[in-house]
Length: 409
Image (cartoon, rainbow, N blue to C red; front, side, top):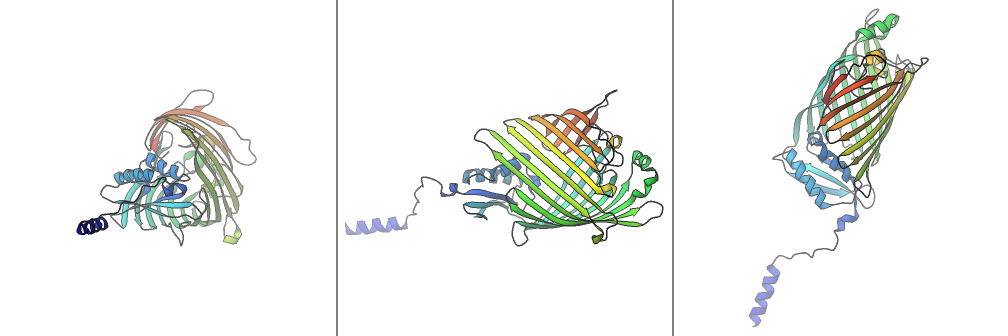
């Protein structure tokens, strides 16, 4: 009998010990402070997955939700293991979550961050080749853009970014661009005796440091150094050197029901002075505010932006409305062929599944002129990041719809 008791004790000692199931997951008392993906390009994830990642920030820690997202991330990067890493947050009872995508220490990706077609202004697009290695990112891009500035510009840009400078709250980036300009006939006609404002080439260099002040609040400090090769009367070089300050707030909120809310706001200042050896002296203020509400398949969003320039700024800094994202349906060259030093714009959109309708209103003008408020309406469809829209400017006389299509509009 004694031998039986000894054998039983030995068997119990060798058997694996199974921990008791706790009544509550001890991690549920922690709040998710931030979520990041390392070792892979997050832009390759489907938009719903990226939304789910953002939604978890500010919520209580849930291992089940993280494992579900880990499976979705694995589908986007087949053949590469995905692990969940949890570390202590910067404040008590908060944690940082990192989805580490393994398999390769370096990742070379080819992406098109923006492609747009405007039936009155043509195609605009950019293709980037990006190399990611740990916290460092290198990007080389080629682009032709007739959408965002007064002029169409084409050329090359290069960017280096370190996403973790001592701490994951600080990022450092350097961006260089070399562009050639093509001026629209309306701009050439409007310039008249101010043709010296036009330039044939532009070089830019921007060092930028971004600090995460709090989870939804970011502060960016940097500088912009631009060189312009003028067209007339003789080719010469002018400089626009400015200090840059940007403050951004972006937070996703959820109520007790099925609704989700997102608040976005930002303010940016560019101040060019003689102290920086700048030929142009100006202050450029720009601000925006956005609110979005999701409820099931319904989404309602509102976005307002405004800006003002004091002093003399180059044409590349002046405000533009009437493109693929503002006053859709209007042609920017009909509104302000030389851009404006004042701008205000508001857009309201409603989406149900893939269907979208919108209403835009805004004005762009130069100090001393009267602001002329313009309106436009439109509808279209969205399939993932691709959009196809038909926009109508509201004005007296004939109706001329504008077709807008592209990625990430």
